[in-house]
Amino acid sequence: MKIVIANTSHSSYAQIICSTIEEAAKKRGTGIAKRDPNYVISKMQQGNAVIALDGDKFAGFCYIESWEHGKFVANSGLIVHPDYQGMGLAKKIKEHIFNLSRTKFPDAKIFSITTGLAVIKMNSNLGYKPVTFSELTEDPSFWKGCQTCINYDILQRTQQKMCLCTGMLYDPKAKTEKVKVKEKVFQRLKRIKESIYLKKEKPSTDGFNKPKLAP
Image 1 (cartoon, rainbow, N blue to C red):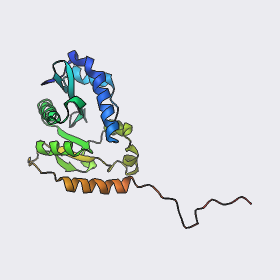
Image 2: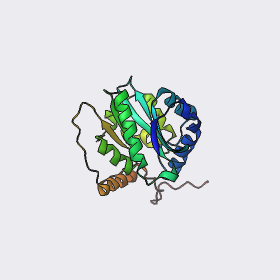
Image 3: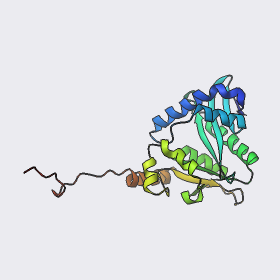
Image 4: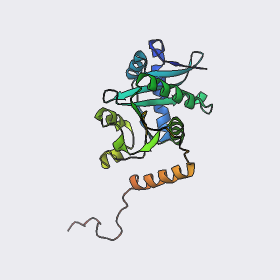
């Protein structure tokens, strides 16, 4: 197994990367599902991605996106092929792409939005802190990427202030302190968010909203 900075020689993996990301999103029932192979290839060409390979078999991937002229960067599309899950590969890929981000964008704030506890733990170990969405990039092209998420309506209803995702930020100018993520606390907060934003209106039983009968 090797994890390397992707380049044009890895373009043939773009389709399986996109398909794996989409299938994982469907399985989770949330998250951003779609990635375009041409976009993934452009990240490889720029040297803004890392890929994990077992020989010539695809194992995992992640890439860098930059916003507001490099003021903010995000490590996006983190994925591990089902055949290689449970081996700690996601953590290794996350560390590689984080270090690449720090090298290429040393002054940038690195941010993440995620619904996954595993990603939140990895981010915390790297020095990310939970933040409100107002502390993340305001670039509309980033938030436009959320349109393929099944929870996009929540983001719209809250005027882009909050969603089921947790916002996290690494600030290179801030003091880095690792914060231990407690699973019970995370699950409780997740249930609270879901109860608020996924709440469906129940039909009225008081008789006032019953349909009128035709005369």
